[in-house]
Image (cartoon, rainbow, N blue to C red; front, side, top):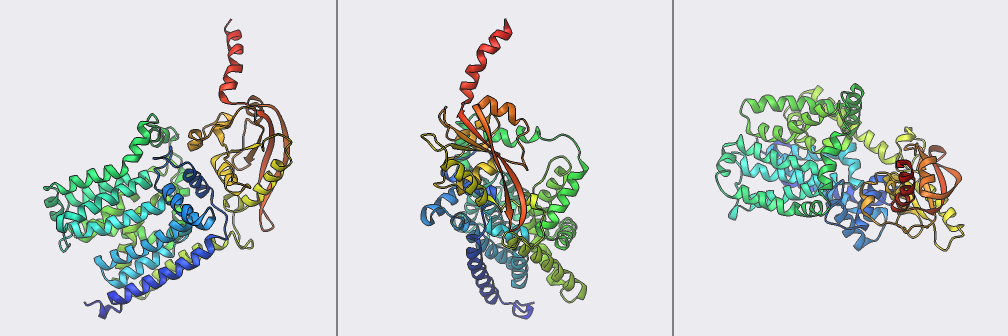
Length: 516
């Protein structure tokens, strides 16, 4: 069947996807400057202010992109989100190309539309996180893999450039997020089950591509080598220490979050698609093997982990890429069935409604939302209250600001006047994530301690007494989304903050006395 007879030519599809992507970019540029930063965005902006080879809890590519954007555009919500907006447009083009390559232009267009009609990819287009470059690199690698291993693929190309492009994409994925460590394994598994892939593995090019991927990822090795391998420990032993056994409620949370991520009807459709891919792959379908290995192992891994560890909504994103393409292909093949058309339309419509609702929630207080989970409202309001206390301080220096939890510390760093360097848990003897590696304030400086009641400082009296010569409570600050209360922050004024080293020196005589 020709592309023209299917109703969408390749050229028409490209015009549609490029035009739609441009329209979405313009809408998202307008929207991006209207909504306060999510805490993760503010935290990664702090990464960008402390540029390094890597960081404790993530590789550096997200921070590097933010730093590049702010260098040219300036510090603003729009500047920080610009890489996400542009990457989302590129992802739509890659998904269109992938669907067209494997099925038809109509399937490619349907795949791109379906992805943009989800909370995961549609809302993710205006929230800059490590998942943004990760997903783009992963989808691009999958598109290159089609040419390398499928029976009708274009092959490695002159000088085997596609293998080296694959190595670059794998390296960029791992430079985005550690989850991309699964990507080279996916490529290897796909090559092993495909005759052309096994033939390629008998040449040097895939292995040189691995070396290239390692070179791209090498800044993370360099940082870890000079920081006692802290990041690798954090992602391995640190994660396993949080596992406390089987918890049934985590399964419900996982399924609920994934149903919101892509829409409940589409989620069921993608699960059905995963099963169909496994059956088709078992029967020798090369296309199903490629898409199945790109999706099913990751989906299965996170599903098995979900009863033991909280699996966040965005973690599963790469696994949905191949499933979206395969589901679009299945829908297009069965488009003459009324039920299939209705289910596909309802799936995308419900997903789009959830996405639009999430877009509008910060701007429209009348939209119902569990305010405890609202993390993009009230930060300017909090910063204004904290700034008033800083302005009325009588000390020679403005008090430093300590946010308990990286979210509060990072949001205050962005929204306080002059964007001062803030401190987090490590300033009060806690685990401060990346903050533990950044600036250490001088002892004797006054401080304002800010604690979100959603993440309370449970041992506040003893912890504050240890780190401050004296403490005065300040009026709490309740922040809002329109007339709705979001959360309340507790504030304390800390006179003459003490460093951990000073506290240790003060404790030494006591410890010696106890020993005698």
